[in-house]
Amino acid sequence: MLNFSSLSGMDKNPVPSPSDNVFPTPSIFGKIPSRLYVYGVNWIGDAVMSLSTLQAIRSQFPETFISVLASRQTQDVYGLSPVVDEVLPVFSRPGKAFSKRNAVSLCFPLSFRSAWTLWKGGWPNRIGYAFEGRSLLLSRALDYTGWKRRGQHQSTYYRELAESVYGPLGESDPVLSVPPEEREKARKFLREQHLDGRFLVAVNPGAYYGAAKMWPPGSYADLIRRILDCDPDIGVVLFSGEKDRWVTRDIASRVSSSRVFSIDGVLKLPVSVALLSLCHYVLSNDSGMMHLGGALGLPGAALFGPTDPVATGPMGGRTRILRHPVRCAPCFLRYCPIDHRCMLSLTPDVIWPTIRGDLGNVRRAIK
Ligand code: SF4
Image (cartoon, rainbow, N blue to C red; front, side, top):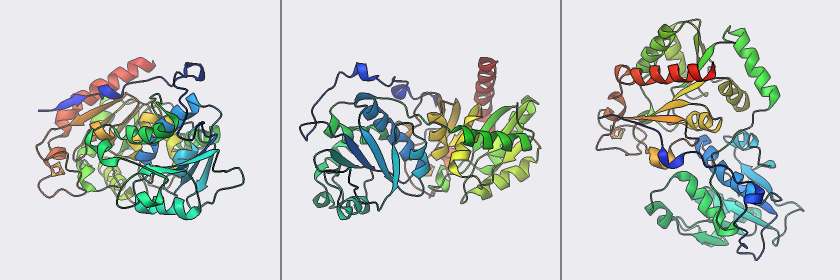
């Protein structure tokens, strides 16, 4: 039986304004630290989900200066957040503005390496979850198994870590801010492909995590043909990174239409996000692009197989989850050891009526 649903528990929760700050809780330091250093996460989707916590901190404590130590994979995501004041390389050292009394360092990843890097770098007041013997490297280690046992959305992992310093924080959906110059570059791409002015469907058929999360390229090609056939005004933009550009090339060769444009993994993330922001509907596997679409407030549909939308579903409340419940899910495996029934049961025939209905609704809403 199919389960077509939105994530009810993650619907819009407005970002509280500073005047709504009903939680002026003193931190564990006796006062709220004015500088926050965050060791950021390495996956794009996780980075997007972590933004809601940073937004809540900025909203309730507007004087806080937020720096993120980010890897190459996610530095652009944090750079597109309107609440992140600076993005630093992960091996940065504390500057003059940093003092033990006015700053705190949140370690978002669960890895030993991240705690070690903060410890080695001399960042004081290091707060993180206890995991794999790294507690000795942290100033305060929170109970990870307790959080895990509660089966909550990933965004609460970051929020509860921050709440140990700031007290209760409000909830909010992640927000990204696209710089005008990146948006102009994206518009230029669309003009060159004669896709400007069309209703654009963004399709992200890859998944860096592994093949188990991927819907077959042949199914995407079939669905895209139906989308193009249902309205001559629709264009499709195929998104991919360097590692999964083979998927978009495969799909583009199967569809072979001038209304399909593949970015072919050549665009840097800020301009990819700008291009995504010019699309009107996002069709994706469970991937970083799905989370970026949610953070841009775009409607869309996400195909879930081996992963759990309750734990890592897109935030923003506008993404429909397409899923075929199977006993073995969620398995969280990168490669399916059996017949990939969780994804293969979602045939184009099965999901097309839902996608067609969504596209009609979105088109009517923007006219
Ligand atoms: S084991 Fe089950 S849930 Fe995991 S990928 Fe295979 S079919 Fe999907």
